[in-house]
Structures are given as structure tokens and as C-alpha cells.
Length: 533
Ligand code: GDP
Image 1 (tube, rainbow, N blue to C red):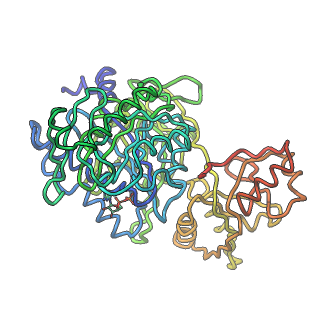
Image 2: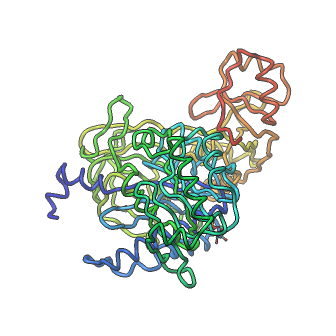
Image 3: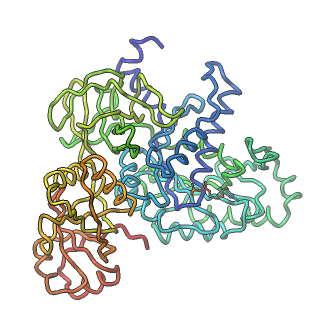
């Protein structure tokens, strides 16, 4: 395509329509990393097989990133993995899990257009999956469900469908159905075409699955009772109306379901195809003015994640921006919507892929890392041409609390500045407590790793050694001034003010304590936090 076609409104709209920007939501060990590898492998092999425009050797794209993560010990560098699949550009945004589960993990979901909910067949819905799903629900993000590890013993397929419907209220609409129970996986029937595809792990499992379409008669003969069961289950699904409906999927009330085993690349092709076929592309996004910003407008984007380098030798800070409209070109001067100041995007990088690559252009749905972007904060909007502002990113209910103090009396100014900076960047939430006063802020976090990052940075960047005293609280709910008064007489609860937005947070020692207190005061406002069941 010529330059003028690429920059034209129609060119940008066509680029946006090719994008699928999503994240995998799952509990640790469900197979997210394995699935990420499998998706990229599949796309790469397909790309190479039919390569007209060679992309060079993309081998090791994912493993490079894994090595980088391992080297650092924590996956704080992650952002977005981009690869082409046929004519589609896939942007897979990482949701850090494990020990470093943090507010960042939630914030990533503000930058995606859909999510893949990955469940371990033997475990079903697990706590972290539920928390992440809750964010998807609040934002009406369409969710595709992948039941993973079907090569290992696990729950019954229908029971898993029931669990999804009962526990999270999403109507499961399977697109494929397994022949063989978990642990005896023979392949899947495509519910829309009725075609059975036999699937086998390639020798060694490092390659694409071996797939073969098989007629019903042959399948019936080969799989006997398992074939009969699968077909009975399919009839049952049909009777309950569990058919895919694009409208309810996009409205986030139903979820297409696929079965497979990422470790053997089984069902991975089907997932990629469904992402291309059904998942929403980058489209117009709501702005604070109440109107949606069309993708073909001038360039705009917002910062959903800030990554300060933990390495003292390279104190750079990367702001990750999701592009919402227009074409981004490295070096372009954009406007920071909050301050109206110009911002030069000279150091734009793609931070996954082959490590850090300089990127020259990007389109709606893509993620760009802006290096040394110290002027940018979480949720900030950048635009070129016509002013636009995206809504601030939500704060998520913290589950870990600690009083932050410094014994270094001479450093109080730096201490305050540091705390303010970390709050602005969204590294931790800063709370003020009447009990403790201004000098002793309470830091609140979704995951304890955020505390480590905060104290490291206070020392490394502001020269303040701090001490964190953990508080015995584990759940917070937003209340109001009336609630604050009501709660004064209660034990094991404290009301604190969140500095960032002035919200009053009632902080409780236990979930059951919150329930008891709520039961005693029927009029008390306690906005339900994310419920991990
Ligand atoms: P993550 O924590 O969600 O990123 O999970 P990983 O991708 O690291 O996988 C956790 C473990 O499950 C690893 O030992 C994987 O090899 C294994 N695993 C992942 N997918 C499958 C699968 O489809 N079948 C089986 N049997 N094991 C799997």
C-alpha cells in the first residue's frame, strides 16, 4: 500500500479492522504461557508456509521474551506480543499473574477489545480467573472461553458448562465439542458445521497438532461409546439453546467455548480462527465528552501501564499506550491532554516481540511503549490534531495494606514527593488515615509485589529508605461520609481516604467481618469489591 493510502481515513479504518487486541485471563498454572507460545507458534508456522511477504526469521519471538522475563525474575516488563495470522494482526496483551499479580494486571483489561478465559479442565473457575473476569464484566468485554488441558483427566464437559453459567452468569455457547472425556481426547466436533476433526499431538508435541477430518461413520466405529456420548451431549446443548449468538457475545452475556490442550497445540488453530472470525476488532472508544472516538479520526491513545525499570543501571521508564484512533508514527509530536503540553514520541518501542524493537508506525488496537516518558501518568490521553480525552482508569479494590514510614527525618520532603510520584503513576494506591495522619501514609495494593516495587523505587529514585508495616486488613469497599460515621463504633474496620480520587474506603480485616457489619447496618453504603467467590 502506498503511504497516502495508509494514512488516509479508509486506510486507518482498514488497519483497525485487521486488529484483534485481547488478553488471556486465567489462574496461575492454567496454561497461559503455554497458550501464548502455542498461538505464536501456530501463527508463525502458518505465516511461513504461505509466506509471500517474508517476515524474516521470527523464530524465538516468544522465547526471547520468556528469557527476558526469567532473567529479571519477575514479569514486570511485559506488555504486548504482536504477530500476524493470515491477514490479521494479533495483539496479545500480557496479564502478569503469579506473585506479581497487581493493579497492572487489571489495568491491562482497560486496553483490550476481548479476552480469552483459559480454564484448567481439572480445576474449572479459580480465584484469579474470577477476579479478572469480574473486571471484564464491569467493562462489558466479550469473553471467549478455552477449556485447556483436555489431554489430562478433568471435569465433565457439561459440568464445566454448568459451572460457567451458575457461577459467573455467562451463557456458555460451545463452538466445538470434545469427543472423549478429559484425558481421552480424540478431537472436536464443530457445532456449526457438524464436522468432526480428529486431533493428535505431533511427535514430540513441539509442532502443530495433526488434524484430520473424519466422517461420522468412521468416527462412530472408531470411538464407539465416546462418539455416542458426544452426540448425546450435543443434542442436549441444542435443546438448551446453547448456540453461538454474536450479539450476546459482544454484549458480554454469552461466551463461545472451545476445548483443547495448549501443551500439544490441540485446539489452538480453532482458537485463532475464532479470534479472527468473532472477536471484535479495534473500534470507536468512548471519551469523556460522551461521544465515541472513531478509529479513523486523527491519532489518539491512552496510557494503561507504566513500567519503571527496576534495574538501577537503566533508570528508564516506559509508558505503554493503547492506540485508539489514527495512525501513530514514531517521532510525531502529540499533545498531552491533561496539560496541553507537546510530547515528542521519539523513543517509541514495541516491548514484546524481539525484545525491544523500535517501532515506526502503529494503528488502533496496537500497543506502543514510550521510553523515558516521565511526564506521563496512568490513564493519560495523548492526541494529535483534534483534542480528545479518554476516561480515567478505574481504581481497583486493594487487598494488601501497609503503613509506610521513614526514620530518615531529613528526607521528609523527598519522602512526600516520592509517595506522590508513585501514586500518580499508579504503582500503589495511597491512603490517608485519620488514625495516623499525613506523615504516615498507608499504601494499598492489589498484589504485595506492588509494595516491593514502591519501596525499591523510593530508595533508588528518591534516596529515602522506608519501612513498611503490614496492616491486618484484606478487603476494602467504597463507602460515603455517612458510612464513615457509622463505622466509627465498629472494630476491625477503618475508613481511609484514597488520595488519588478522594474516595472513602472502608477497610476490613476479613470478608466475613465486612458481611457482619453490613448486616448490622442495612443502610450502609459498601460498594461490593471484586468477589473472588
Ligand atoms: P501459566 O501459569 O498459566 O502461564 O501456566 P503455564 O503455561 O506455565 O503451564 C503450567 C503447567 O501446565 C506447565 O507445566 C504446562 O506444561 C502445563 N500445561 C499447560 N497447558 C497444558 C495442557 O494443555 N495439557 C497439559 N497436560 N498440561 C498443560
